Image 1 (cartoon, rainbow, N blue to C red):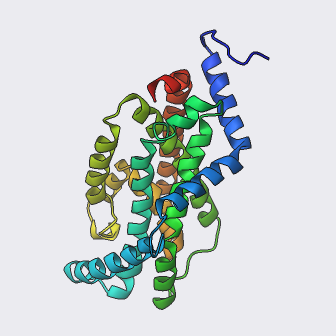
Image 2 (tube, rainbow, N blue to C red; image 1 turned 180 degrees about the horizontal axis):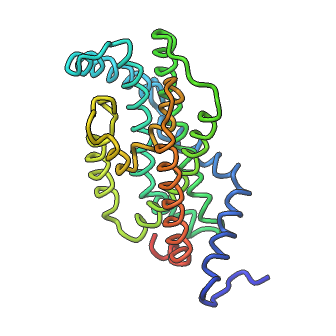
Length: 272
């Protein structure tokens, strides 16, 4: 087998090589996990509390904002505080995946130039890093759920919602990684877009506050994604229309991400 093949990709070859790259990356999942774990260790090296600073900051933020917005919205604090905590942690997870996804390949330029490995390994590395960051704040959610007696709905919705989230995380990271490698303006653009979506998406406020035109919330791609996971964990039923919309957005997201990756994969090493 040749070490270097300089023949250009044509036609369906883009798709074949992209599938081989993703398959090779899945076989090296342990390597992606190790790289993501090392990123977390390096990030908090020399810190006194390490990753628990995230837990502490989440607890302080939820406590301060919960009392304020529960008073403004005239909502019982026992109902609003768990909702706000879970929503903020989920949103930080989603926003961090989008913004950090822009640097998926550019931050790994040394490895990309030094050795041959599937590009999808770097996607796994970014996803693992964001999942571990998310887990640092789970303790605050568990404590609030125990205090206010919030019981998750233990049915098919919980594993399906978690699986849908995991698939979307890979698609978002892959898409933003390719765009971020080609256009270095993507990080500030993604950050500004997510800041706008933060106020549009029901994160600080509950969807029940909208009594007229609530169906238009489905036009926000972040709302179905958050609701399919927030609903089961908060013990509330998720409407079928939200599930179908979330699945449709996931299919569209993967189609765009895979199509762009298949077309631009051979150029990533030159862009980074």
